[in-house]
Length: 261
Image 1 (cartoon, rainbow, N blue to C red):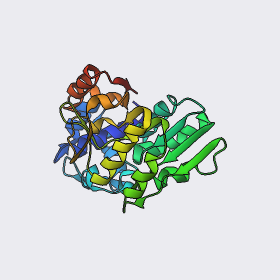
Image 2 (cartoon, rainbow, N blue to C red; image 1 turned 120 degrees about the vertical axis):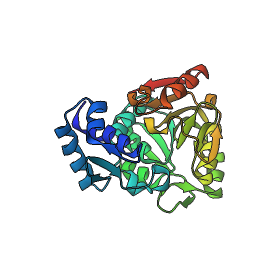
Image 3 (cartoon, helix red, strand yellow; image 1 turned 90 degrees about the vertical axis):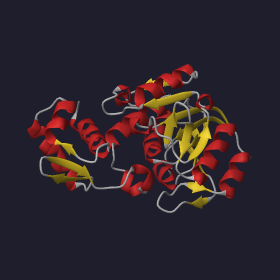
Image 4 (cartoon, helix red, strand yellow; image 1 turned 180 degrees about the vertical axis):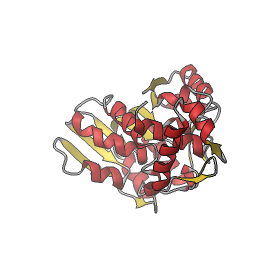
């Protein structure tokens, strides 16, 4: 495990516990306590954890309560790997609808290599990444920019999507649950995703493993509404993601092609 991925996993473990000890982190990560202390120091400098005697606690609210800029550094190495994997599934010449979210910004970064493409974006952050890229015809879907998220939502965004058709919808998600299906923390975001699902020939959902087993506030769709789900290999580890294995199994039973990267 390289340093960036180890920092990602360390942050997940801290956020998943009220408080976690250095010795417990060392055991779960398979590294020395000295390495753990060094990694915690690095995360503390970024303001993501707070060191306490013998361990660490998270310093920020859970991801659903934090804005885009607060979440952007979290698990960046993992999200970039997911972004590269998803972009590799997009055929040149496709018409793509790209959802909002911190992970889909990484997808945007890698889509330039798949040009020519027509990409409609639901995120001002993704628009910045794709603007002026050779071979990318960029469409910014109209709508209201949701404060803190810069995702494009509301009746204007929905109405615009209803007039378009896409070969592929790359969908981010707040939660995926074996029984509850795909869900979001914002009613506005959920409404836009539902239209995106209806207007695309296929949908690739992408999320890091922390989203598995999560039931967010607003249901987006049942599991089999999505064709492919891309997540990271940590989803198979019940020690760090108790809901991961069961959710992956439910997705496969629903006929969703699951890719671990």
